[in-house]
Length: 163
Length: 163
DNA sequence: GTTTTGTTGCAATATTGTTGCTGATGCTAT
DNA sequence: ATAGCATCAGCAACAATATTGCAACAAAAC
Image (spheres, each protein chain N blue to C red):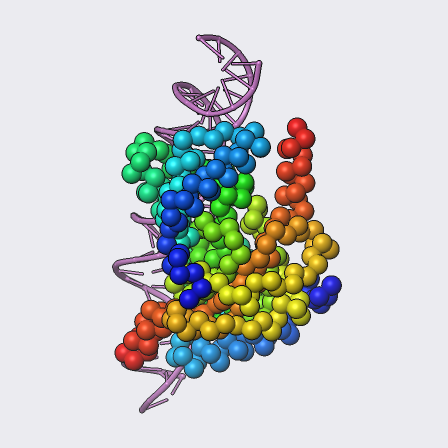
């Protein structure tokens, strides 16, 4: 067990509060508007946890802001990711996913159903990052993607194989 | 420079040939059909290199097989990935990308424009993979995603900032 | 309060991926 | 070679996801 207090679900209220404060601060620093919609989108994403898609956030947000439009949520998430309050997650699928964890952590990825779950391990933290300046990239952090097959996909294949 | 002979573009003919042979072998082993379309899709992807999207492969394939249908390409790529002849790449965007390299390598990812390029580094290979059996995953390999901002996105931000 | 300017909501549209079905074709056994 | 047959390709329609342009609105600064 590596993160007993956050078993891949959402974030508790205190943590959400401080993230919201961080957001408002960054927003001001950059001279951007801190709207109700953006705050609600952020909070919904934090409550959802677990790499939500834009549409999952939209659905969650509608409980509190019924009239919100889809492009608003899409733009808000993009905006939040720009600021680094959340980030885009790297995944093998074809639907954008956001990551509400901003600390160093890694992912277990199923290449069959595209689901992925968080994974933290001291041995994967503290990697020495090679110099990439020659390629023009300015790096902020890294993630290790442990790729394979999840349990339910393995069972599925086994069943089909035995048919 | 880490891979002078494959600067992120396609694969030479010899390498393509042996990948095709691998494909045909795996196909037979699994009792699946090795069709013209699938072979052409595989070869197009190998020539393209550089994590093509399904539509990029489609476009490339149409040069040789003008009548090919879009679902055919989509299904062929999925099929090739199932067999492990190519694989799905993890990326921050919303369009599926395939990776024609099957050896251990890593990615430099731009979180602004979602582009990513290959990166190999001995220091990132040979990581000790922690035990993940408790989570039900059976791992095949891993990738390190070095996340940041590419040169052109940095220049874009700088320009906008100075406006 | 007024102004300024960035943001929202809407509608339309684009892009990407999927499904069901029929006819075609690769593979195997003969 | 050929026949049989299961798999696959092509088609058309559809579904899901994301984006754009613009008028109306509202947050922040004065």
